[in-house]
Length: 267
Ligand SMILES: C[S@@+](CC[C@H](N)C(=O)[O-])C[C@H]1O[C@@H](n2cnc3c(N)ncnc32)[C@H](O)[C@@H]1O
Image (spheres, rainbow, N blue to C red):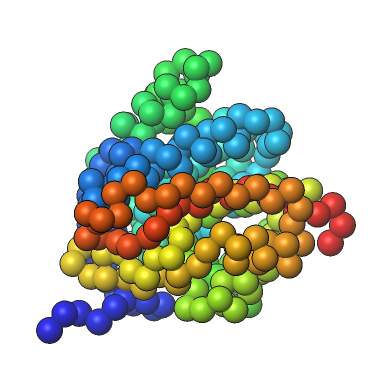
């Protein structure tokens, strides 16, 4: 019998999926063969967003639902010199910590750093991008976006930038919970601060290490409504149709969304 679909606290139990996630999806910027263009597309869009001048040098950034990954922070680290990674599972947090400490068992992100350094024509080398990110990550902390205070017991001053990639639709069981999660994490963003998100649309599952994980199917219209209600302005949503949907056996998104928005100046 197939394993039941994994959701909620199952993320804590499926220990072996941390490594499997990295090995199946994050060996190279192209991502999993089945998914077509994926991580490379997010890297390019995040590069454009951070190069656009909307984030000032020396900014503080909170990444929500980091997983075991750091690709989503590579372009940001050019401007954000203080980064906090917040993640639900201990195994995923340990994976980021291993990378920060240069543990011999860490994941190899070299192809991603090379990709981002090539996008940044002014960067001296991929090693320079790597060392600036390593220096910028100050903390890796637990979080649960379904809780009223997702980062308790930690308290922070509001951040200049919030990022989140492929987390909210995986973490939230329904649309109300998704909206509430956006409102909750928005409390940690300064008025005028920038929210940057990558997500998938109309996905119901993705598989890792032989397990299928739940995903809340959402679309661009719903996301715009959620961000408007949470007090954002200048909401920019780009949608890219899936490039290999008919051959994809590991997930079933119909497109990728990259969103950025500004929190209104008055709360
Ligand atoms: C598909 S992974 C995305 C990881 C990473 N951000 C990326 O871009 O590859 C979904 C992540 O959401 C996290 N997650 C699941 N439930 C959560 C919750 N209640 N609060 C915060 N994060 C959660 C999982 O632990 C996992 O790291």
